[in-house]
Amino acid sequence: GCTHAGHLDLKAWGEVMKFKDRWKPDTTIHLGDFLDTSCWRAGARNSADDPDKSSSFSDDYLHGIGHLKELRPDVVLLGNHEWRIFGLTRSSSAVVAYAAEEGVKAIEGAIKKLKAQMLPYDVEKGVYLLGNMACVHGYSCGEAALRDHTEQYGRPVLMAHTHRPEQVRGRTIGSPMGTCVGTLMRIQDAAYARHRRATLRWAHGCAFGEYCADAVQTWLATPVKGEWRFPL
Image 1 (cartoon, one colour):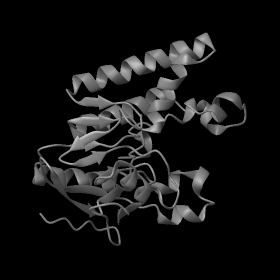
Image 2: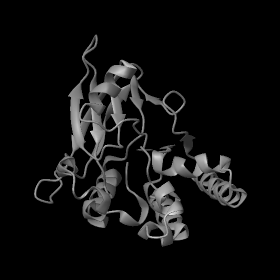
Image 3: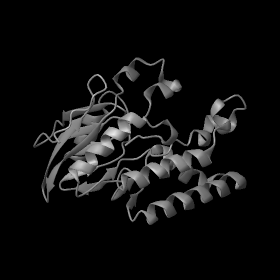
Image 4: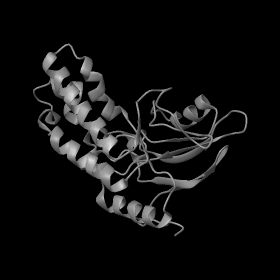
């Protein structure tokens, strides 16, 4: 999750893809934000001085969809970055709404060609169940976001969104485990967040594991000094 198109860290991505080829998973999920869509931000659209105003959505799209083609996911969850475009199909500006509609068609068409299931960015409809685990992009980003998601769904959770790879148990019956995979983007590219102390918790990561109909075991992998240690 959170690969962010042209901001993808290619070294980290390469390590994760090599592990995927060895692990040969039954199910592969992209947890969302495969696009960055910076030019679609309200600030970028409404300010002549915002540097994101001139960023190319065509490049963003080609990078993001290209990464999905490499990953070959079975499930794609739309994140808040993709959802910007979907939301703007209802823009009061006919030009913006039309451009957004074309963007949505391109995204939906590309994911359909991948034969992947696509879920919306929606707190109820955007939940994919893998075994008994709720896979979501993520809907909050505070310090307790992962714990809150785990308690909200009352089951194990796998999410992205916060860019913080971590695991925590929910304060509910069965103490379900929540896992956040972090990000695979070049973290230094997020200039908007470089002044925040919380950004120091951002790191690369991915998750893998085993599941059956009513249980799941999730392991979180993160690099140590730039080196990924996978079991295979």
